[in-house]
Amino acid sequence: MLVTENQVDPDTKTPAAPRRKVKRSTWQTVIWFIALTAITLVVLYPLVWLFFSTFKPNSEFGNSIAIFPENPTFDNYIKVSEGIAGIPMWRFFANSLIIAVGSVIGTVLSSALAAYAFARIQFKGLGILFAAMIGTLLLPFHVVIIPQYILFNNLGLVDTFWPLLLPKFLATEAFFVFLLVQFMRQMPRDMDEAARIDGAGHVRIFWSIILPLIKPALITCAIFAFIWAWNDFLGPLLYLTSPENYPLPIALRLYNDQTSSSDYGATVTASFVALLPVLLFFLVFQRFLVDGVATQGLKG
Image (cartoon, rainbow, N blue to C red; front, side, top):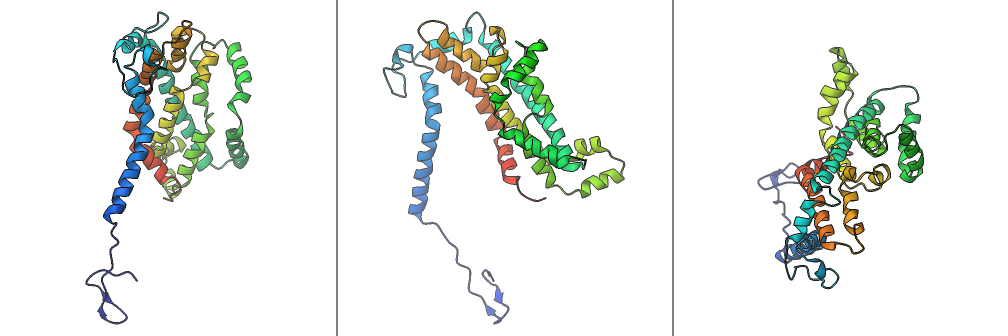
């Protein structure tokens, strides 16, 4: 039995000894602080190096490993703002934003609907369909590249954003469906039964009861969907052929392919600009990501 100060032991009827408090020594705290600081510096070093490298001229790349530029310049930002191949940078940025935002909306909406069907509706073949959905996680993306390309090419959708967005609205991301299913299965079914007694159907239950309760999981899915779509290189490389439709990952390649010599300064600067939205998106929603991971596996 754990007791604190001023408590009485019920067996002996005498005041119990106060509970000892474990206090970390000063030198242990210092060691932990130094270790965590060192790990943080190692993790942040690439980002810091990337930032300061945006101010380096091309002559310093490959000749100096210093983190700070010897002759700082803003020419790289001027080049990036002007764009490349006659296309302004804002166009590449807008294309990436359209693809990323559309992917987030489609992935979250379709995955939530599919997860609700698997978690809250009993129908024939539920176990087989759920196992087949989980099995798609083991299927490499490269296996379906050719069939998908032939399909979208026959539909005349190549060189548009539809091949990159349409699958997102069809719950093709099994990872997100599985994540939401696990959250929904933790919820007591008494809420569904009470809602049905009040006359609510599946649409009302899904929209008014389930969605508000799985908000951390939805935001977790949105964060990963945004990052994956923003950084996607293979998909746009396959389906987009016009430079004006290129997103940022494809546009970065142009800085190395435009001439026989690569413009490292502009490439690094464009990479840093492309990284900023992902970094800001993560910083804004990181607490929801932590909540989503922390609550997974807990029973409601």
